[in-house]
Image (cartoon, rainbow, N blue to C red; front, side):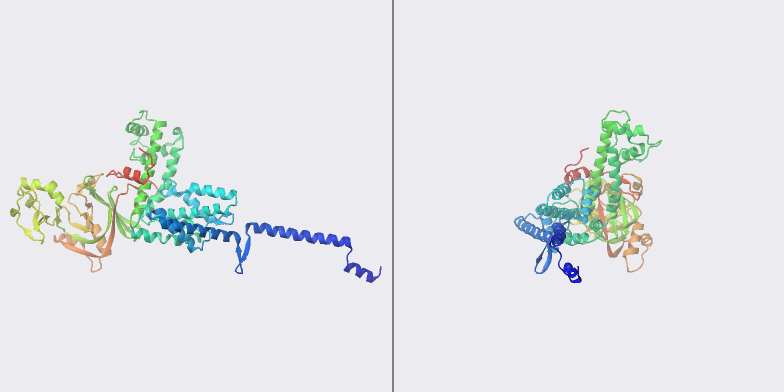
Length: 560
């Protein structure tokens, strides 16, 4: 074959070779097309306004926008403005800010932020929510359904439900369980939630951003730190056969249940004696053994303690609080806590109101410290406790350092008052006690405006501070070592010049110090607390408030 023939063969393959070559090219093209189609099944695209758009994302946005418009129409028709209505408004705002882009789903699957939020919602009992307030069971069902079929509507339902629950969780974390709240603090807070949630979604640690909305109160923080340990103990007792519960766990459980005052068994806290006491208290067979009925009662008592903890977390979330420095009076604990830079600096023993004259629960600001105060006796005390003593003994007032004043703060001759009339003082006169160490207010008084005529003060009855149960007052809070607290307040919140409270007291003259900065004081009713080692402490429910409040906040709680 000559050279020309060889060239001709190279330039023009034979019909047989041509068919083989064509088949190979077609095969490659088909294979490439298959992979392109396969990949576009998960991320199909189309061109809109010269922009390449993900079809699934585009359809999701359209469907979310449609659903949001339906919610807007529903809200217009519903004028109740309860939490569901408020959450719908937040849902609208959240997706409008995102231009209706989904936050938790991507194509046919949920993203890693969905896993983070659902894990947080699943663990809500560790944050003081004993029931499924956030519809996590429904969210799990929606997720399973969306994974088993490709219906876009179900995925959007999952998307919106997750956002709704996340927003509700954040509201409850900050302000407690509520159905309707129209206070300015609450409304101002919920307006910020869509932005906070969007911020959380864009952060690597969504959980930390969500939990940052919680109130930064020392008592709240301590309770939250201790609650998981208590829940673990409760579950250990609940799901362990009575015969296999070790003594260490049992002793601590009985301590938490309020049966014993020691968390360990020893010679003064004998296991058999404590179990006998529990069985006797709940009318069980007295065999001093942790049998099935005794075990059931113990589990129930621990469950009630859990609800108490949830209630107290809710009380602290209901508290309108801001700032890092404040005083916190806990009535059942008989303590006043000085909080500085969000840490406890010091604690003082206090005496609070009797059950018949309870110390009210409220917040205010300390404005004045008074050395050597006089005491203007409340009308209720005159009517209920003093009038019969005055009628019986004409020297009673003088002997106890009392005198009469009129509305102009002028002294009035006691003999001019007819004490035998029904209302001898009327609206014109008042009984006042001179300032001295024997004054009912002692030598120091702290003034904070309130509608209850309640204040914080010293007392001449120092021995009462040795009592375990210190409910003795008519509602005011009596303070041990008031001079020490007064010095702290003037040192930190009085800018004019240094004041020695001890020297002022020694002068036996009434002296008023107007603080240059008001100091927040919270007077609260918290019946449990967490400790530094994550243990729990439960205080006596001195006003018997917990059971009724638990029923109101958690209607399906355990009955003891």
